[in-house]
Image 1 (tube, rainbow, N blue to C red):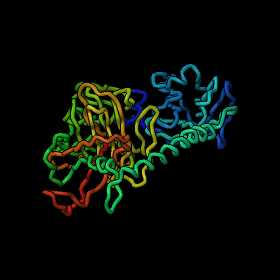
Image 2: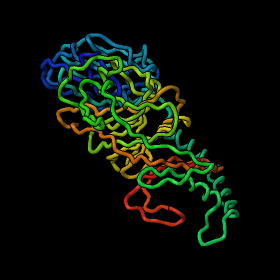
Image 3: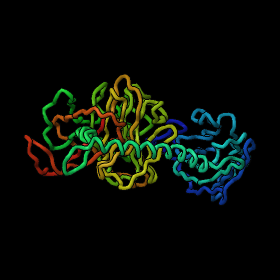
Length: 436
């Protein structure tokens, strides 16, 4: 999400440092109470208006899809802005402004396509207030996507079920004799384990790789002037005042971001961040070379690999964003970077579940980054806290399994093996399991 600021018309995927201080009355945004329908190849008009009636000439008016950065049309500083518009809408939209002084605008979309079907947000922002309305566009004359998806799923599942049955039948011949029937392949698969907290790592063998959890600290030279860092540089929150700080090249001047002092150009790294009960936040990894000035869209294309919580929704910031199903709200998030493998994974440490993994090809220095988001009306004042991770070496035992690996999972250990004997752990231990 983003809001306008003195620094520019808009930001995508982040919160700006401050709102302009000119007073403006509060308002609401209203759209039609029924879906707007349009035919393929035709045009659609999506209306909305302000209540009470007031001029929107000097406001930002933004039409977007599921994500604030998914801009269908943007009006700002008294004119249409096309720099952030999604490619699929370029040349097809027009903001009807005949009644903008009365707070009434409409978005016209020409040459309607199947991808135009769905929800749109109509967002107004004055200098001190912002509101939005949800509209729905229904495109007629297209094949029901659920029917297409059903046939695709059936085409995949039927042969897959036959393959699984044959494989299970063959696997019975590989079972070792004993009380529990476990295949040799399963035994090998279960060997792969990263022990992260509290346990002594076994001595690395010929098939092991060792790494250390990262002691991450915040870099004050990169922090937006609205961010307040603790003295130990482990906590960051959105402050009430714009601090008088030098506008050095490293500093984010618009997005409320701060980077870590540490950077990584290789290896496997893991760190954890306490998000607590914050309603909005963003965490991830970015390239050292990312832009620090003006509005930013935090996507892999722009050198950002991140996830966020905003408005009660968890999303991975892909293009377009990927909703993340979360059964238990995470109070702590684990981030695992495997530079050479090209993977950045996010974990819910609260219930030990895997949230999302980005895959990409990395080059140059990568740095963790943190966004506590705007503290709107004091509702998001809590800080993001970088959690201490014990500095013991973490041992990753690699086992070469012929089976395709499942998604990584994060789980707690209540026992461990040391010197050939089984012991009970004194505390719950975070263990990241990755199958090779």
